[in-house]
Image: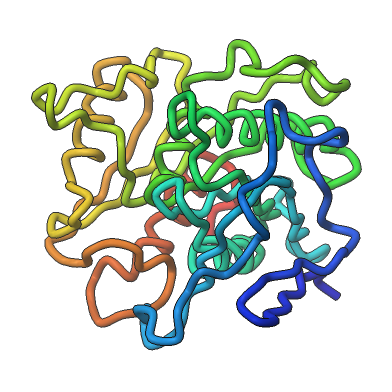
Length: 298
């Protein structure tokens, strides 16, 4: 039986029930975390915008990051794993739309999904992505260090992020040579470099005020992992984010595949719509097969 995170919504607050496949990633608390931001809560209002006719959990005030593991089915375990970063502008986390639903899709293609609940909103005194990058590096290290236990291949661990989570996936793909925090345990001695990366309708990659120059925190090199990008041209977060990043990957000779769609907007996750962009998961699946990360269709 798949172990799912249980969500309880009481008076607008969110409680995540303890379960074996979820754990705090910082045993003594996240580095530099001072608290005082209020209780973790679903910030979606009763009249909040729907996606594909359904509400979205917009989780805010996260100060205790966790991972929740969705194991691939035993009869269809490819040994590949993906750490999932929900989006939300580094303000909230779209926990179901860009989190739990994504892990369930990954399971359907034989991939273990690991949902990271990283710190939001952005902390003061540094870049908005500083604390989330610490959480991402730590989570990838934990997953890789537990590869045998999780029945995955330590050389087949990727990341998948949406919107701000797409920026985080790009960060993790380029800032891995050293941890951005003091080591905690053995999990911080293994590499935090993803083996592949999905960057889905990303933000913050292209600096508009600098003529759409690639963001300085993304030192793309030949060692950046193979990357799959998706975005719509009518995305209010600007399709240039994907284009600029793709060109940087191309110039560094990093294997990359980009799909741009005329329409689709932003924040659709995997929920089906009438637009062609809704089929991006099948394209992503084909890409994974091409890399040998899941078996080719016979």
